[in-house]
Length: 459
Image 1: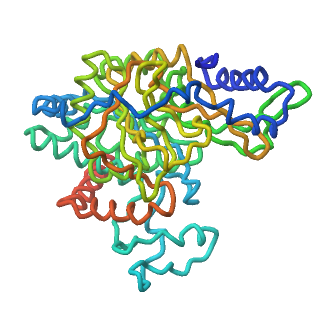
Image 2: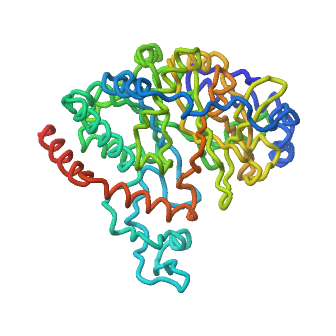
Image 3: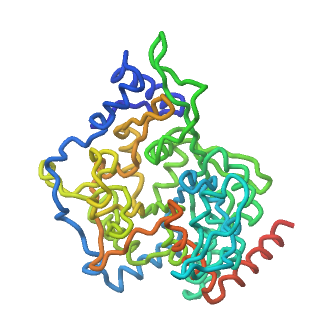
């Protein structure tokens, strides 16, 4: 059950966190909270879980008309595009994920007898983190000089442009119909917004290219008057669940004009924009699949059809990689609820990644998104806790939205493996995905021409 939260503003959210800490952990030390956090966070009903029973197989539902509907919805601007890029590449030690630059990785000069590259000599604080940042096939410096976030957006614009051309439409007019929200953090805000301004909002209308800055919060520690935010503790993000709830708060969404001036939207104004969307697609900046296919007409078409059937959310379920299993949202059937659910890994009482066979891809659709966002604003999410640096941090999970609305769990007869750039072990695949992206016919020329067009518009 969701904890009582006041989602009117960031200040009211923070006060809600403090009150929750006092209510549930009053008089306890951070060490004691850490000891009990596994029980506190645990999903109520773990004993009821079994393999999922209600998965919808994508291929069984697809028709040419669904794919055509997806194309039309994109061309007519009826899809709302959300891109989550607030995360830090903590395990990679390379700063904000959006700004990861493959040219910072050492060039491959020699290969070991096994065929894998020897680490190049690197100086500085990133040297240790870059030891495995090699690919036996791809030299980082041979790639186009684009950050991960730049690549993510250029791929999306490239595919929307090609779709418009195939339909005999003017790409600039199609891009002008698109509505997009980019979620960033405070540390990267200046650099990312500078990049977006320099490319003239990628061809979108400035008022349709929206931003939200996800804040970091200091940890909570106990004091004489109870738990309070402690400025001496490191600030940390409150996970993607806080990001989702922040979108429902007042004046959190903004757009920039071409001079970089900020214009904030009220909650009513933002919700008004969502009211006309038939689907909201939430992209994760670290998903490598998006570098080679940003527009998936199959899943978009199915999401639109499921929205007609009353579904509020779709979650794609993929197979965990048996050779390199990762933690994440477990998809399972809850016999007490009589439905499939997705549960974040830290609510699973330490279940090993290898035991998580059905995994949420973190690529969700929200048909008619206003329905579930209004419910989210009213009910909030469950608030798991984590203790770091002797302080308490809340860690709500965006995936818990599947408990707030009717959710369809989509899979494929041959499920794709999860491909995200989370650690150095994923770097060879990340570089390979970038190389495939660069080698798309016309991709590099498209970016070059787009940059010239943007510069001309900005004169």
